[in-house]
Amino acid sequence: MDLLEILLYIQIALSASCLFRIIRGPSIADRMVAMDIFGVLVVGICAILSIITERGFILDIGIAWIILSFIGTLTLAKYLSGKKLNE
Image 1 (spheres, helix red, strand yellow):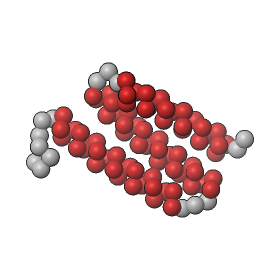
Image 2: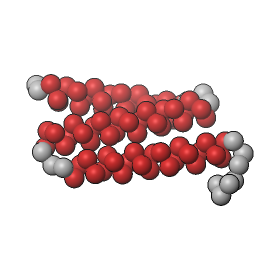
Image 3: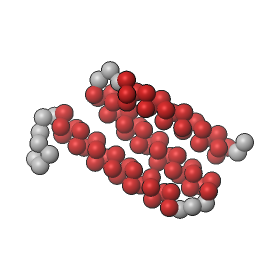
Image 4: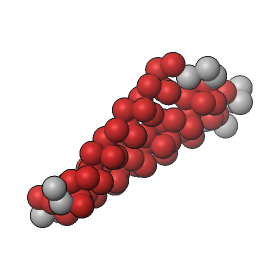
């Protein structure tokens, strides 16, 4: 096995543990942190897959994912603080 494949399997296993924390998190704050970590791990998976397959468009998917994750985190933080989204 190549080192990149091992790193890919580790990233997938860590993503599965983050999904478990998102589903079974004791509080909303724990779920938010797990969603942020999951987004970073997905971008890492996209980067590794881009290197393995030598296809650059996979990095574009990772960039779009992290932007959507950031917007979702901001929206959830505003919602939890009790403010409206247009404030």
